[in-house]
Image (cartoon, rainbow, N blue to C red; front, side, top):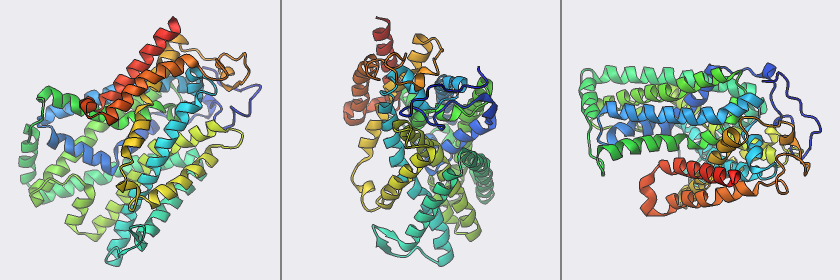
Length: 474
């Protein structure tokens, strides 16, 4: 791997300093930073609810649930190791890597789709993070107050603007500050979650082990039997991480070596997911023992405890966890993707400002409008059609290009450039994308295909890669 990867003859329509390869000498991430990428991705309110529900909704014993979680973690680890390697090798982000297979202009197609999905969820998660701040302020002021604008109270709006402004401040200070926040949030959330588990355990006493035993034995039934339930858990967990898998190069480009990346992925995925799920299991079993019902939403647990110190710590916990996943899954991707669209005018910071501008609108309208109009299928459709792009990129790098890229050509708009293809677009890649993308869209909209669950992404990626390989070799 070259120590310096300087780009000569930089084309302003394809190059800026944020998209340029990061020299090995300037990479500072090790396994701990990669671990915290995944820790922050898992430690959201939704992630906790998902982990807890896996033990309650599928009728399987606890060991089988843990086996499914570990299998999903190992599989996702394999996916991101494949996607992360070229970015570690060449120091480039996802949209630049996509130029190799999609064309130097065609790469804008998957990049802008990924950006749209991320921007939508960035706005939504900004609102969700603000509810943690509102919880704290409301506790201090004795109530949240009545809605004053677009279904939100004055405290809700103040909280939302605080979170929105904090995220702008964070990214404006650059990737180093984002890294510091992620490195703080990952361990901090775990410390608080462990304390919460101990508090619940203390309150529940011997009743906790009894309830854990009941949950561990399997508390329900799942249509289709045990194998279908096992596969459903695996598919659900894969689908949870799918959004980050495709643009994982945005993070791995900062890592010092392949071995550090793989070590971080191993600790951050199968081991991290299993440990987080164990904490969720303990706390959920404790809520049954203490209050007589399984509470899978952390905010409900805090409200039941009714303690101001706990509310303060919980608010900081929910805020850190939600901002963490927002940065990992929904901010860094569109910042690079938008920069790839117009490098001469949009850099990482400008891309972040554009993302934040849309987040202000989406988050501000979340309660009154967006959450009510069934837009989720539209956003999920855009996310699903990215699956074939993953397959195409992986097959192109490993089986067509034999893990060798011309780094200069990735930033060249010359018609003679290796990745210029047909006016900047690789028509074979686009054709290989269409049919698998139609399948991915169908899994979102056709009820008869709903049984595929999270495996629709995997199938779409496999189909995209297979079709591209056959077309390219032919």
